[in-house]
Image (tube, rainbow, N blue to C red):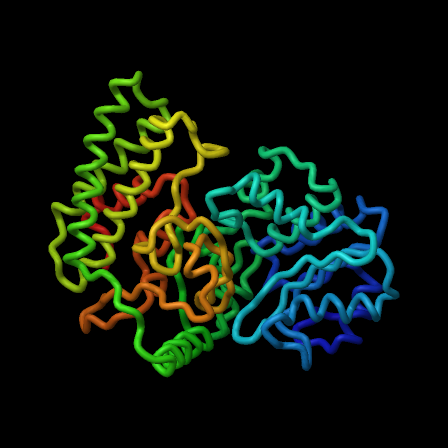
Length: 404
């Protein structure tokens, strides 16, 4: 049987009976055979059936919760009982992943608990490819939730699970793309690993459709403009200077915290020196604001005696609109052709409709959601996907200025 790209449920169930790991080349992370072999090793560890199905779409099952629905329907076709079924497929206009437990198989909540423990500040899937996400969640379930932090983190650091820096659907093992205009834009690969965010073909059409839908929803709520954000960033930096002086009087910060505070402060100050209050300055001003908040959080944790966050992770902003403050929770947000689970403030986490921050860019000064631009901020997610936002921002400044 060839690769399954648009199977019916019965066809997919038949394929999984023959081989419990179905990963076509377009989802192979550039290392298809290694991905298949790695998933087979994990599947074979289990004392109950485990299946992995990655397909662009399943005939007649493409709703908003399609991945879970496909897993449930496959479970019925594959005989029921204890099982874990991982599905990556089209969900509405995007691609989604679900690892679903049935019967007495280890519960799905174990994966969520591991993410909360190992990435309490958000960004749990930063650096992971979709096969890597499935491999990590299956590993957590098969260990009954017991996984060392170093092993949990290793999935985003090692081949074949980490997101490649530059890979398009259709390319494999170093080969170029197949020329198709349908680019999957594996965002936690290209985006989080720092490569340029590619939008073309169907993806561009969907982005345009999403923007039209946003306009139909009505008027966006009023948000701080460039002047307000600059003023707030200045106040944050002034407060930081005062708080830092107090922290130094109490014995100083630890090495990691001091590097993060100094780097964030210096980079934020440089950004404010190089920007004004025009429409095209908003993205950089928000970057300065986020950096100031990251540094203040480090100092506050030291002064209060709370100590660093687990794993040394930083304060992370609301991905939907970094002006909102800390992303204390998570939610799935449509970005390009994907649904990403990202840090979100409480209001955005509960909101039925999202209003992402829009910034102006390009010669015509058109506004778009900030993550649709190719800038240092979109690649780093304003800190949602990196531990030290100041580093890529400072590199961009040294290279000639952050991109707009």
